[in-house]
Image (cartoon, rainbow, N blue to C red; front, side):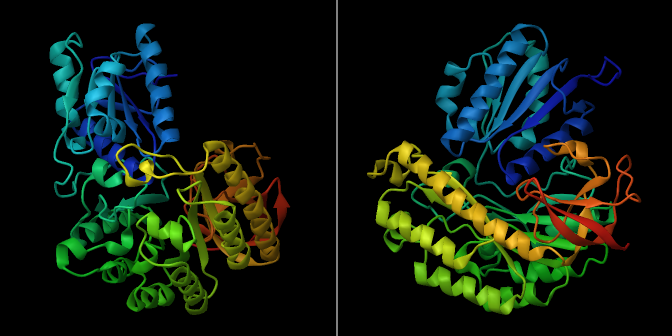
Length: 465
């Protein structure tokens, strides 16, 4: 139910879809709207304006966005919401079509115009929503916005985006056309934001960009991720630094050294490889070979003891027959990557891969199921090996009611370095001293005692600050 507020203030109901990078843009728009005097809500019923920030990367994401738009269009017709603003990747990608095909939308905002959101809302107020759909499409290659944010993830962890766009031009990907060329934020601006967040109580920051290993190349003429991490490592109040979306060929020795030596940089590396067959990697314009990837993973395990690897894989890419798919399965079996996300290839118009011959969608989806079944066995084996160990966890402030299925109240969701939020699940901690009704902002040492319903469970071993 919508919170009671002064009804002279317009309510903006906000929904964010898609990736962590898009979430940051949503948080920036929320900040600008609140600064302009609007009331921001996570609820949409009763809102004067619904702001939907969308993903348009692959078919499933586009379908999800359209479903939300149609749902809000129905709510608008029924009088449950006022106006509808659709922002982000979907309108950026389909500027010419979205207004015609979805006339219920009052305004569309591209990825180059997130900072214009207040002007968008005020323009709608002036027109009374009677004019045709308004369009706001700024320069997608402009410098990265340094707008403030309202953190929407948690009171203990937050994303921090260090760059926008991409220059890799993988054959299956349309991100450069939606988000523009790769643009790094100045190092000092990132450190300033990180220091502010740490001072406000955020203990874990998750470093994100389309490819964080490329950070700094466009600004400084050299990659500077290792230097950025050294600077972040010096922030006393910051306890955990997690790294996401690292291109395999971006691991220079100085970067590995910084990760290995730091007590704050979590030994958890997200390295999307997409496939392992050399022919497919070449067709998809991926740098490096199967041998390069195998050598990298071996080096990382040797130089960073206890490292947890995450990757993403795509089934049904052009050129993937039974032989190539079996090669991928064998790689997964031998490498035993702890965390894996698997997706069926989605041919996207305007990309080179969309013109190539490929397996059927049914075959791609069946291969997703086969890979996930294989990965579930690898994960179970790894989870069993963790029973009896003591790990430091960060207690989640959302409480057990945020998780499905529901667990008894004596369990509290928490994460160790090996669980990234929103994608890896949790460790359920049993302790009568943890009050789930109030925020828990401390780290706790937990002894893992078993597995229940696929989740690790444990008991408090020692409390810490």
